[in-house]
Image (cartoon, rainbow, N blue to C red; front, side):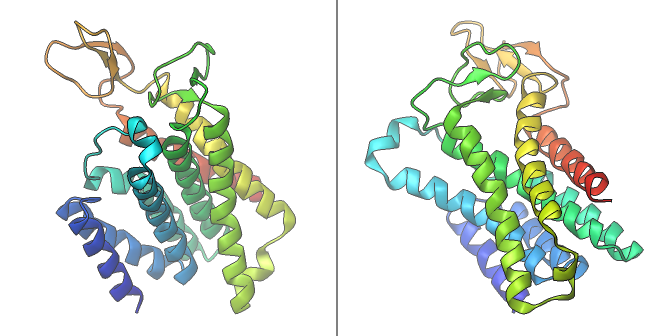
Length: 259
């Protein structure tokens, strides 16, 4: 059943041009890994990350009043899928082998962080106030990595809470053994870790992520284009690398905070 739903979701994502073919295949592999090394509810949290992102984007595309906020979106690649999902798999495997629930919680925290960042990006771009640089507090271009806005910040907290609360409700409804490990402290730690993950992603986005400047328009872009000049960051640290690093570090933070 889980595998069938996963494959169906991947096919829908591919035919609606949300994922490339290779990314759709990888999505099936990582989703099944979440189920095998975790449980049906860790699989569900990963599904909610991708589903909520697609639904938010779809609603924005269908809403005539916000069309001007949208830029052309490329299909998500294998690299982007792994950037969000691989940290959680690592923690689930460690928890599975060491037979500790902390690995499970660390994985859920990493997904909460990825969801928080995704919601902040997808919803924050609709903010009526111009985003500011996380460190200098100077206005930056809407959609540029490293920026924060009131709407995006609220969306990131909501995204993190959404993942953690849904996971908790599922365990409560089915009275799973893991439910006994949940406490108010763990719930708050996981939500705050997910929220911190979004801020950490923005921090990396305005420091180590590579950015380029176009020669004529002087516009800042995140991928190299002809004649563009590197103005920030490390060449191999792109947005996907930042996403992976933030999700992994947030999982570690949750692990040590709960231990």
